[in-house]
Length: 433
Image (cartoon, rainbow, N blue to C red; front, side):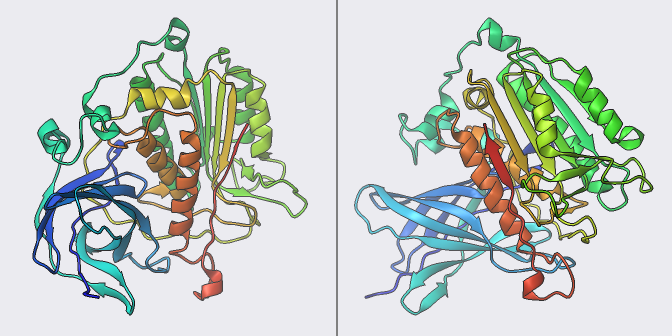
């Protein structure tokens, strides 16, 4: 059988400024038979995406996902990223679709498409160069461009260009998000990352408040000199959400577990100084969840970004992901409302690491659990995601957060010496009630 080598260009996503972002490219590529193909590629903030390309009368679509390419020590930079292709299918016309992967190199801290691999009987082979690669910003995402690859009845087009946002009911309009952030910003080992986490959490939920169209957010921040168990308990006792409100609790700092602890939930180290007893100055995540549920709000979201192992374990610290060219996508109000305004009374708890695991962070991007949670959430509500509004989108968010955090953890070592058995395993845990 004649072997065919494919060429394709794309870029993956990044967390840019206040919003998570997507990347969209158009480009041309050639098969070995010299037929020129035109392509349109979308990659979301969580590393998922798809490409549609036209070859003669055929339109083909393929799903894509960022995957692990190499293990990297804590003091090394990542030098390549692989996007794996899968589930290639023919949409119109006649052609034989198949899946391919895209490898990216890093130039000046920006990911650049470098090569394509295709599955062959003798392994994978590299293909050639790309042509006419165009980065598509928000202002360039026109109806004319999109209609080259989508029909007006498809979700991708409908999400972008059809206004189907309903009016909120009076009860929904009066809903408020109460955001409680507890951040160990004064700690010498996690303080810089905790500051970035705190700013990112505040921005994320402020933006969501605006997109959903509800009352201004109530924010409670416990950090710096105010950080401590007594302050956390006092604030949890004091605030009074209404019955239809949303409570979000986010912790970023040190965490641990004792040998006697049976449940998987970590314990939060809430000492205001190192001289205090960490066993006395701590609260478990399940305790915080119960305190918040007792307030009677319609939806509770409790997130803890911390380790879940022996308190004497050294912290892993990884190199930053490369910056990636991106545009800030519009968020879909209906998708956002379906996640946060569903009338069913719900409590969700998520923590960064399972039992006997450490949590990864760095000074540049903060904690990777919350970064990948943001990425997954903003992907779910992006207008360029062809999904429909659905409360079950939370499960997609959880799976993406777990997968991406795990992949990142596998690129560093949690302890010395730097041998394979000391490579990190970090798997976030989510429970929905």
